[in-house]
Amino acid sequence: MSEILIAQGNSALSITLNRPEKRNALNDALINSLKDALREADKDTNLRAIVIKGAGKDFCSGADLSALRKISESSVLENLADAENLMELYALIRKTKVPVIATVHGRALAGGCGLATACDIVLAAKSASFGYPEVKIGFVPAMVMAILRRNVSEKRAFELTTQGFEFSAEEAERFGLINRVFADESFAEDVKNYLSVYTKVSRSAVILSKRLLYQMDGMIFETALRSGVDINTIARLTDDYQTGIAKFLNK
Image (tube, rainbow, N blue to C red):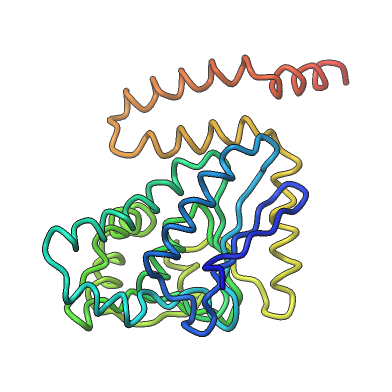
């Protein structure tokens, strides 16, 4: 059975984590399949968005028992390579040109919550739940902390990562961790409507906006402004801008 399922829509690519019997737990094969799918999707010049979701009852429950056993039995260098593999996935999501959107139902825990957090946008069903319970087994959600710290306040990030409690979709939205909470019964339709927005805006402008937003992380104010000048200039030369401004001026 394939670790992921890929479905191509009109302008969005759907990637489904396909280990429902393991609650879509992360392992090397799944992480590598996700990376390959994102790299391949990035070549599609018509693509407007990528959706990551889970098969079965949950989005993703983190690492499975075999992965945890492998970690406990591996050397320092082997564990370093394993951690770097997950780091590469998180970095790749940010480097992928179009928005990568997690649509969460059921549970998104540990590495699963990390995967959702790493996405550009998170949409959740009202009954979904989240959590970083790694601290309960002496582990640390270390790499995702770099992203979590940019999503929520310092004190909230401290609380979430050091107490390890599970929290609801509505709490996650209040924390600033996710973008929208939709009713369970209309979740699929609400996600579809949300995605449709990206067919109505400029693809090149979205790509440039994503790139600039993440490039600004850690920049001092003046450097961030200068980066804005560069992207502003590039945007003016795109086909989308030329077409859009011509329509506006000819109204």
